[in-house]
Length: 140
Image 1 (cartoon, rainbow, N blue to C red):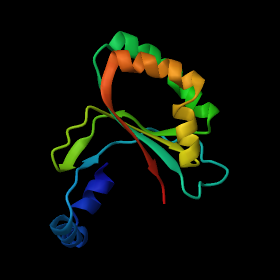
Image 2: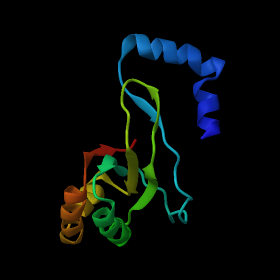
Image 3: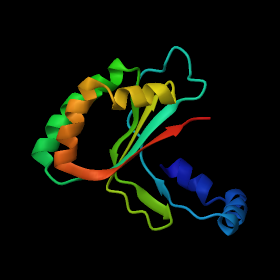
């Protein structure tokens, strides 16, 4: 995390950040990733991502969800990039609770996982044990 902070606060990026902030608004957080999983045989051309900010309200029930979800992600060729990190605000007023970023080889595969029967059952558990926001994002 120190590397990204050093870049963000560097004199070179500070000049660009001032230009960006004068022309746009948004929220930015720093979030620590998890230990890397094995590298894929081929890098995705334009990956698909599921990005979530979750607030857990029932830790015991959520533990069931947390234990079951990795196998469903792996079955769809996905992997965690960030799992349950506390995001550190850098810009804006976003104060995330638990940040999750999951990478798939395509946006279609990300959506297929999210709507799959095996994940749908776990999703019900998550929704009773937490609240939050989940989005899909296409890579470049």
